[in-house]
Image (cartoon, rainbow, N blue to C red; front, side, top):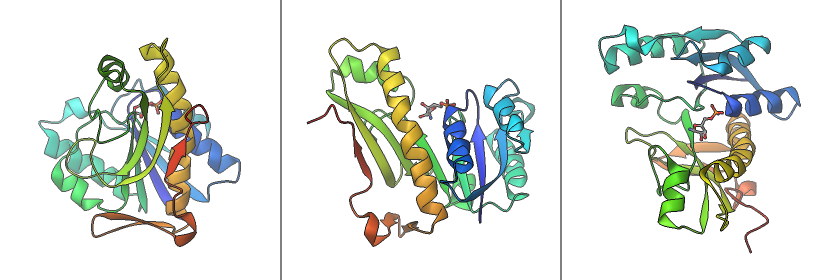
Length: 215
Ligand code: GRF
Protein backbone atom coordinates (compact mmCIF):
# COMPACT_ATOMS: atom_id res chain seq x y z
CA UNK A 1 0.00 0.00 0.00
CA UNK A 2 1.27 3.48 -0.87
CA UNK A 3 2.38 5.85 1.89
CA UNK A 4 0.79 9.28 1.79
CA UNK A 5 1.83 12.34 3.79
CA UNK A 6 -0.64 15.24 3.93
CA UNK A 7 0.41 18.85 4.56
CA UNK A 8 -2.13 21.32 5.94
CA UNK A 9 -2.27 24.81 7.41
CA UNK A 10 -5.87 25.15 8.54
CA UNK A 11 -9.35 23.67 8.43
CA UNK A 12 -8.29 20.45 6.73
CA UNK A 13 -11.58 19.57 5.06
CA UNK A 14 -9.82 18.18 1.98
CA UNK A 15 -7.64 16.06 4.25
CA UNK A 16 -10.83 14.90 5.96
CA UNK A 17 -12.35 13.91 2.61
CA UNK A 18 -9.25 11.79 1.91
CA UNK A 19 -9.45 10.16 5.35
CA UNK A 20 -13.18 9.51 4.83
CA UNK A 21 -12.54 7.87 1.45
CA UNK A 22 -9.91 5.66 3.06
CA UNK A 23 -12.25 4.75 5.92
CA UNK A 24 -15.00 3.91 3.44
CA UNK A 25 -12.66 1.43 1.80
CA UNK A 26 -12.43 3.49 -1.38
CA UNK A 27 -8.84 4.57 -1.04
CA UNK A 28 -6.14 1.96 -0.55
CA UNK A 29 -3.47 4.16 1.06
CA UNK A 30 -1.62 4.39 4.32
CA UNK A 31 -1.97 7.96 5.57
CA UNK A 32 1.40 7.94 7.29
CA UNK A 33 1.33 11.46 8.73
CA UNK A 34 -0.31 14.87 8.68
CA UNK A 35 2.03 17.83 9.05
CA UNK A 36 1.03 21.44 9.68
CA UNK A 37 3.07 24.64 9.75
CA UNK A 38 0.48 26.17 12.07
CA UNK A 39 -0.19 24.82 15.57
CA UNK A 40 -3.79 26.02 15.57
CA UNK A 41 -4.69 24.20 12.34
CA UNK A 42 -8.06 22.61 13.03
CA UNK A 43 -7.15 19.73 10.78
CA UNK A 44 -4.46 18.55 13.24
CA UNK A 45 -7.16 17.65 15.74
CA UNK A 46 -9.19 15.85 13.10
CA UNK A 47 -6.16 13.83 12.03
CA UNK A 48 -5.20 12.97 15.62
CA UNK A 49 -8.76 11.77 16.28
CA UNK A 50 -8.38 9.50 13.26
CA UNK A 51 -5.21 8.11 14.93
CA UNK A 52 -2.93 9.52 12.25
CA UNK A 53 0.49 10.71 13.48
CA UNK A 54 0.52 14.52 13.46
CA UNK A 55 3.46 16.91 13.35
CA UNK A 56 3.80 20.64 13.65
CA UNK A 57 6.75 22.51 12.18
CA UNK A 58 6.60 26.22 12.86
CA UNK A 59 7.84 28.09 9.78
CA UNK A 60 8.37 31.19 11.96
CA UNK A 61 11.13 29.39 13.85
CA UNK A 62 13.32 29.27 10.74
CA UNK A 63 15.50 31.99 9.29
CA UNK A 64 14.29 31.48 5.74
CA UNK A 65 12.32 29.43 3.28
CA UNK A 66 15.16 27.02 2.46
CA UNK A 67 15.84 26.05 6.07
CA UNK A 68 12.12 25.55 6.81
CA UNK A 69 11.69 23.48 3.65
CA UNK A 70 14.72 21.34 4.58
CA UNK A 71 13.25 20.60 8.03
CA UNK A 72 9.88 19.90 6.47
CA UNK A 73 11.38 17.50 3.92
CA UNK A 74 13.29 15.71 6.67
CA UNK A 75 10.06 15.18 8.62
CA UNK A 76 8.16 14.07 5.50
CA UNK A 77 10.90 11.67 4.40
CA UNK A 78 10.83 9.90 7.77
CA UNK A 79 7.55 8.44 6.52
CA UNK A 80 8.94 7.26 3.15
CA UNK A 81 6.11 8.85 1.22
CA UNK A 82 5.06 7.67 -2.22
CA UNK A 83 2.86 10.75 -2.45
CA UNK A 84 2.84 14.13 -0.70
CA UNK A 85 -0.55 15.84 -0.70
CA UNK A 86 -0.84 19.61 -0.19
CA UNK A 87 -4.29 20.21 1.27
CA UNK A 88 -4.61 23.89 2.07
CA UNK A 89 -0.90 24.17 2.88
CA UNK A 90 -0.38 27.93 2.79
CA UNK A 91 3.35 28.11 2.12
CA UNK A 92 5.24 28.82 -1.06
CA UNK A 93 7.70 25.95 -1.51
CA UNK A 94 11.28 26.37 -2.68
CA UNK A 95 12.43 24.98 -6.00
CA UNK A 96 14.70 22.42 -4.32
CA UNK A 97 11.81 21.07 -2.25
CA UNK A 98 9.52 20.80 -5.26
CA UNK A 99 12.20 19.06 -7.36
CA UNK A 100 12.87 16.58 -4.55
CA UNK A 101 9.23 15.43 -4.76
CA UNK A 102 8.85 15.66 -8.53
CA UNK A 103 6.02 13.39 -9.73
CA UNK A 104 4.84 12.68 -6.19
CA UNK A 105 3.70 16.11 -4.95
CA UNK A 106 0.14 17.24 -5.68
CA UNK A 107 -1.97 20.26 -4.74
CA UNK A 108 -5.60 21.33 -4.89
CA UNK A 109 -6.42 24.87 -5.94
CA UNK A 110 -9.85 26.53 -5.85
CA UNK A 111 -10.02 27.68 -9.48
CA UNK A 112 -9.85 26.27 -12.96
CA UNK A 113 -6.12 26.75 -13.46
CA UNK A 114 -4.42 28.46 -15.18
CA UNK A 115 -7.13 31.03 -14.34
CA UNK A 116 -6.84 32.67 -10.93
CA UNK A 117 -3.65 31.34 -9.35
CA UNK A 118 -2.98 32.77 -5.88
CA UNK A 119 -5.44 33.92 -3.24
CA UNK A 120 -9.09 35.12 -3.21
CA UNK A 121 -9.96 33.07 -6.27
CA UNK A 122 -13.74 33.15 -5.76
CA UNK A 123 -13.87 36.91 -5.26
CA UNK A 124 -11.73 37.42 -8.36
CA UNK A 125 -13.91 35.07 -10.40
CA UNK A 126 -16.99 37.09 -9.40
CA UNK A 127 -15.24 40.37 -10.23
CA UNK A 128 -14.20 39.08 -13.65
CA UNK A 129 -17.74 37.88 -14.31
CA UNK A 130 -16.71 34.40 -15.44
CA UNK A 131 -19.60 32.01 -15.99
CA UNK A 132 -17.71 28.84 -15.13
CA UNK A 133 -15.44 28.42 -12.14
CA UNK A 134 -14.13 25.39 -10.28
CA UNK A 135 -11.17 23.61 -8.79
CA UNK A 136 -8.06 21.81 -9.96
CA UNK A 137 -5.80 19.03 -8.69
CA UNK A 138 -2.35 19.27 -10.23
CA UNK A 139 1.22 18.09 -9.87
CA UNK A 140 3.28 20.83 -8.25
CA UNK A 141 6.03 22.69 -10.11
CA UNK A 142 8.22 25.47 -8.73
CA UNK A 143 5.76 28.07 -10.08
CA UNK A 144 2.93 28.85 -7.62
CA UNK A 145 -0.41 27.19 -8.45
CA UNK A 146 0.95 25.82 -11.67
CA UNK A 147 1.68 22.38 -13.02
CA UNK A 148 0.32 19.45 -14.99
CA UNK A 149 -3.43 19.16 -14.38
CA UNK A 150 -4.77 15.83 -13.11
CA UNK A 151 -8.47 16.53 -12.66
CA UNK A 152 -10.74 19.58 -12.68
CA UNK A 153 -14.32 20.13 -11.58
CA UNK A 154 -16.40 22.92 -13.09
CA UNK A 155 -19.44 24.64 -11.59
CA UNK A 156 -21.57 27.47 -13.00
CA UNK A 157 -21.29 30.94 -11.48
CA UNK A 158 -24.86 31.92 -10.63
CA UNK A 159 -26.21 35.47 -10.82
CA UNK A 160 -26.83 35.65 -7.09
CA UNK A 161 -23.56 33.99 -6.05
CA UNK A 162 -21.49 35.54 -3.28
CA UNK A 163 -17.89 34.66 -2.49
CA UNK A 164 -19.19 32.39 0.27
CA UNK A 165 -21.82 30.58 -1.80
CA UNK A 166 -19.40 29.99 -4.65
CA UNK A 167 -16.68 28.78 -2.26
CA UNK A 168 -19.12 26.37 -0.60
CA UNK A 169 -20.28 24.91 -3.92
CA UNK A 170 -16.73 24.45 -5.13
CA UNK A 171 -15.60 22.89 -1.85
CA UNK A 172 -18.12 20.09 -2.41
CA UNK A 173 -16.39 19.38 -5.73
CA UNK A 174 -12.92 19.61 -4.15
CA UNK A 175 -13.92 16.85 -1.77
CA UNK A 176 -14.76 14.64 -4.75
CA UNK A 177 -11.79 15.28 -6.99
CA UNK A 178 -8.99 15.18 -4.41
CA UNK A 179 -9.69 11.65 -3.12
CA UNK A 180 -10.21 10.64 -6.75
CA UNK A 181 -6.76 11.87 -7.78
CA UNK A 182 -5.13 10.18 -4.77
CA UNK A 183 -6.95 6.94 -5.63
CA UNK A 184 -5.66 7.00 -9.21
CA UNK A 185 -2.13 7.54 -7.92
CA UNK A 186 -2.48 4.79 -5.31
CA UNK A 187 -3.72 2.36 -7.94
CA UNK A 188 -0.80 3.21 -10.22
CA UNK A 189 -3.15 4.72 -12.80
CA UNK A 190 -1.71 8.24 -12.59
CA UNK A 191 1.86 9.20 -13.36
CA UNK A 192 3.84 12.19 -14.48
CA UNK A 193 5.88 11.50 -17.61
CA UNK A 194 8.09 14.17 -19.15
CA UNK A 195 6.03 16.88 -17.48
CA UNK A 196 2.70 15.49 -18.71
CA UNK A 197 -0.03 13.71 -16.81
CA UNK A 198 -0.59 10.13 -17.90
CA UNK A 199 -3.81 8.42 -16.86
CA UNK A 200 -4.45 4.72 -17.40
CA UNK A 201 -6.19 4.04 -20.72
CA UNK A 202 -9.49 3.17 -19.07
CA UNK A 203 -9.54 6.60 -17.43
CA UNK A 204 -9.39 8.55 -20.69
CA UNK A 205 -11.61 11.64 -20.33
CA UNK A 206 -12.05 11.07 -16.57
CA UNK A 207 -10.13 14.19 -15.64
CA UNK A 208 -13.17 16.40 -16.14
CA UNK A 209 -16.02 16.65 -13.68
CA UNK A 210 -18.83 18.89 -14.88
CA UNK A 211 -21.50 19.88 -12.40
CA UNK A 212 -24.99 18.85 -13.56
CA UNK A 213 -26.12 22.50 -13.65
CA UNK A 214 -23.84 23.14 -16.64
CA UNK A 215 -25.36 22.19 -19.98
C1 GRF B 1 -9.22 24.74 -0.29
O1 GRF B 1 -10.13 25.60 -0.90
C2 GRF B 1 -8.11 24.39 -1.23
O2 GRF B 1 -8.52 24.34 -2.57
C3 GRF B 1 -7.13 25.51 -1.03
O3 GRF B 1 -7.21 25.82 0.34
C4 GRF B 1 -8.47 25.41 0.85
C5 GRF B 1 -8.17 24.46 1.97
O4 GRF B 1 -9.34 24.05 2.64
N1 GRF B 1 -5.83 25.13 -1.47
P1 GRF B 1 -9.26 22.86 3.66
O5 GRF B 1 -8.19 23.20 4.67
O6 GRF B 1 -8.95 21.61 2.91
O7 GRF B 1 -10.62 22.81 4.30
